[in-house]
Amino acid sequence: MMVNDPLIEQFVTDLRPVRRRSPWRDALTLAVLAGVEIGAVLGFGLMRPDMPHAMHMMSFWWKAIGLLLIVGLGGASALVSLDPTRSPRQGLRWLGVTALVLFALGWLVDALQAGPEVLWLRLDPAHGMVCARKIVELALPAVLALGVIVRRGAPVDVRGTAWVTGIAGAAFGALVFALACPFDDPLYLVVWYSLACALVACSTRLVLPWLIRW
Image (cartoon, rainbow, N blue to C red; front, side):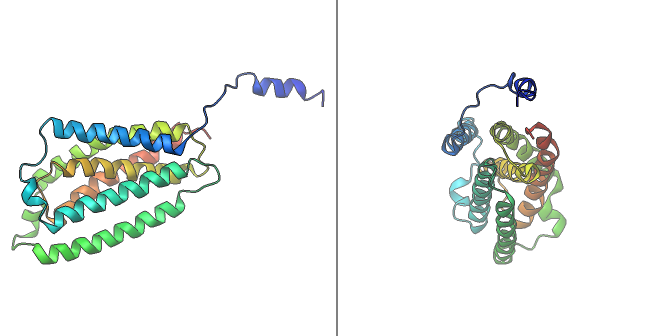
């Protein structure tokens, strides 16, 4: 035993006390940051001017509630996965099921309210690319905040944690942007919102594992 003492001493010399994690504190921190970002969007007068009319449209509520569900599922899965005894894989499966259900509901909403416009006009690439860029920009603060919290945790499945972190942050950016976005066409939303969220999620998946303590 005495032979191993110098080796043990070498390993523990640079260790520092680690503050105990609290999932509730992490969730409260994220909620405050989310409130600040949403408040900033509203405070700068960026809310869509036709909001009273939009709130009577099925597509608006499909968009808002769907994104809120993904934010909740992704954020909860990310926080849960910081416990080394938990995995984000179940959360990823639920996110996949939720996305499929939302796409099916979007198709139904589209069938009920779509106009006679041709596909290219409905997609409106000029505005669509701008929307995708703004969603990415609005998602960055949420991804960074989640990344800081994740780095303080001890996830075992770092790749799965990176996926749910990216998905949650991307969906939050899309949810905030939905307050300002004047487009409610389900086809437009599925294409451009999905593109932006995929870019954020994939980027987070590539970068975050390098920042997490293994």
